[in-house]
Image (tube, rainbow, N blue to C red; front, side, top):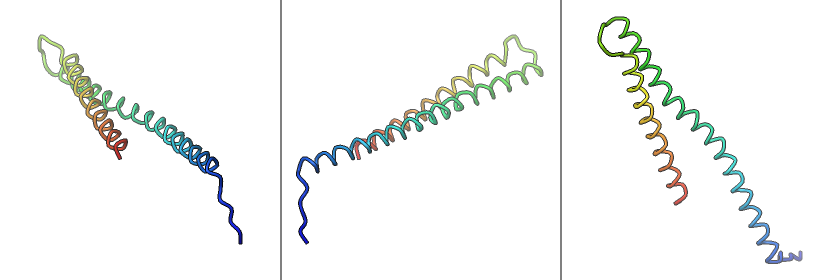
Length: 102
């Protein structure tokens, strides 16, 4: 049997096209990943904020103080949620940097 070698430019073209295809697939996967992260980060902010507001409403009904527990705990919950979101984002950024270095 007589095997012919592929011309070098054909091999390069196949290599280039396969690299483009792999990058396109990673980009598409990262889009869905990004949307999922937006949801995760959104919930990580919303849940502590709503829990703080609910606890504040409960405390306002049971205590008589000169300030609003609802407003205070809403702000505390929001701060905790933002710190939680920052934690998730920094963790994902670190993981992405490690993937790029590999």
